[in-house]
Amino acid sequence: MGLYLVESIKGANIFGKLAFIFLLIAMFLGWIAYTTANWCRIYITPDDDDYVGYGIWRVADNSEPYSADFFVGTDKYSGRVGEHNDGWLLPWFGAFQAFATFGFISLNVGFFLVVLFIFVGPCKSNKDMGFWNAINCIFGSICWLIAIILFAAYFEDFDKKPQFDEPNVSYSFVFAIFTFALQLATGIVLLLTNRGGGAVAQDRK
Image (tube, rainbow, N blue to C red; front, side):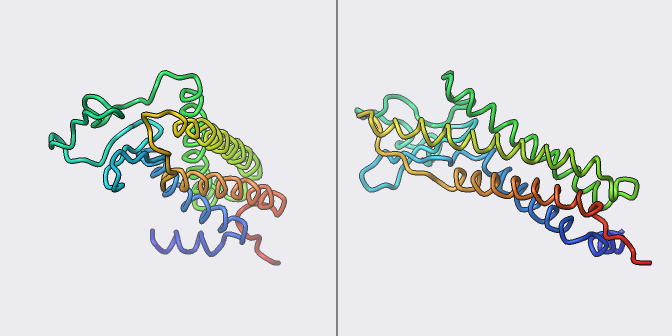
C-alpha cells in the first residue's frame, strides 16, 4: 500500500503534486480556522492577560472554568462570559458563517477529489474531474474571501463601542487568509493540470 502511494505521487506531474500539497496544507489551516474561536480577540483587562476570542461558531474567554475571573461584573461585561455557541443572530454574521461554511465544504470536497485524481486508477488523468474540481476550488476560495471581508469589515465597528476594547486579529483569521490563497492556487493549478492532460504524467513512447 505504501509503495503504491509513493509510486502514485511519483507518477503525478508537477501540477498534480502542487495541487495535492496545496490542499493538504489548506486542509490543516482551514480546519483550525473553521473550528477555533480565535478569529479576533478583545482584551478585557488592562494587562492584556484576559481576553474573549471570537470564531465562526464560538465565543470563548481564556479564564479557568468556574474561577473567580469567570464572572465579570465591570462596566464592560455583566454576568458570565464563559463560552457560547453559534455566534449572533445578526444578518452580517449569518452571511459570514454561511460563506465560511461553503468555503470549508468546498475545501474538503476538493481534497477528496484530488486524492482520487492522483491515487485512484480509474480517476487518474480524468480531465472532467480535474476541471470541475478546479471550479469547486475557485468557488470555495471566493467564499473564504467573502467571509474574511465580512468579518474584517464588521468587527472594526467593535472598537467604536465603549464597552469593548479595540479588537485584535488572531491566528484563525490569518489561517483563513492562507486557506483562501492556497485553495485559489489549487484551482489555478488544476486548470493547468487539465490542459496538460491530467494529473498523471504520460509515459513517453
